[in-house]
Image (cartoon, rainbow, N blue to C red; front, side):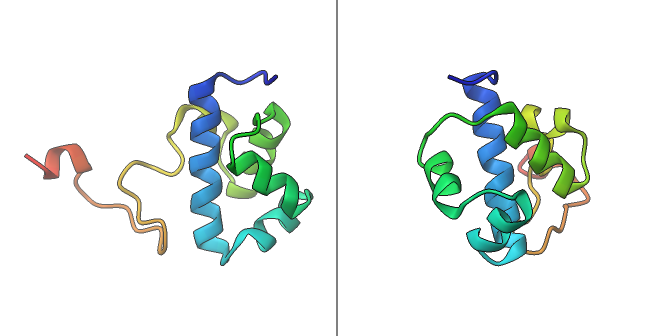
Length: 95
């Protein structure tokens, strides 16, 4: 069981995927989070995301934990590989 809602857990997993792309794999992400790769694999496979993990993700991303659990990090439309953020929000660009 987790202190985070299902939606918040999805947002943390999204942030973790972004960090995986930025760091070059799961091993560097697990190392900086101070968790085992197998634990990270379980989390990404659907195991509950703890509030502690959300705080660690926020710390290494240098963003408030609220940004991680609400889906503001990474910003919608941000390239998962280079981190480029479009000038115009994606929703407006599609119009």
